[in-house]
Image (tube, rainbow, N blue to C red; front, side, top):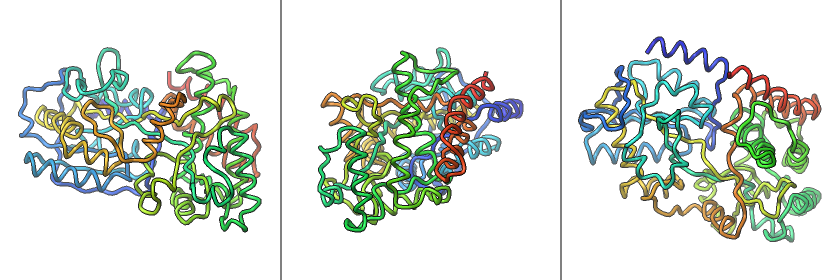
Length: 447
């Protein structure tokens, strides 16, 4: 274990890719039992050990789902007698927390990585899930995360993000959702709303583009996905060591719109948080708000489904065919260093979450997840339904390619350049340099 952790620390120093926080800004912990770990490297996905003799310790990535996970863990323990601990990392701190927890004697038995780049740091700790019940329940092998022939992780949630829209305020301004079908449409309407903000009773067209650590992932990761997506699509690739920046002009156009037609001065964005943006939208101070389907539960406490909608982040490239940004960066992994009993218990818990009535209901209704398993029930999440409607109408979902971003250092470089640009202390060339040159530098370090 010690030798592996030293190697892992070196790898993370060179090329760590932190998981982008999707939702809340604070973390919490709770438990219905304790977890244990012992040194054992499993190669088969069906240990002979009794699952009832083990424990489960899940290090949860999603702060916004913490309460639901705590409740579900209690239900499982009451039903099976198996102790389950759920600890939730603070937003933006998952990788750091995971490193700390994995170094302990009571390490997580169940954790997550964000895709191939994240897996590179943790593959030596991942139990091979080949032949497991949870793999057999996937709707497609596309949701398997592999290292060679080994299945090191499985996707457990599919999510969408775009521009969340207050339909009532949009209509108050004299527009309908159908009026927005391109970037040009969006800009024309946002500019008009911004010019009439006092008349309309709003502070700006867009909620603040917060660039503090709780919010900047929306722009240095999620918005940055679009120029990567279109470049990959144009070049017929799904990864690269040298991004060209073909669509960075479009990236600039969208970012400019966000920070110009905003609830606040661009110079204030460095200190604006995710909570600030959410509050502005909830309070009716903004018509538009870039975020994802994970925000539905908090927004549904105030808005009915006909009052909010999610529209694509129209990018000015292929707007007529563009859908929402839909995919996953959330893959469950089982700690191969755990005891056979804990591995068996963890595999059983994972499968129960996605097959039982209690588990599938909690994931769909309480967490708002769409899960890629044959036993899934329909989510009541309006944004999930809108994503399906876009796809059914022939729109193409924008795939999540930010799992190929070379490192967290790269994201931070882009985020810093965006912040300086918004504040007027830097120019767009700084963003281009961070995006293109920074990508090449970080990709080389990862080799």
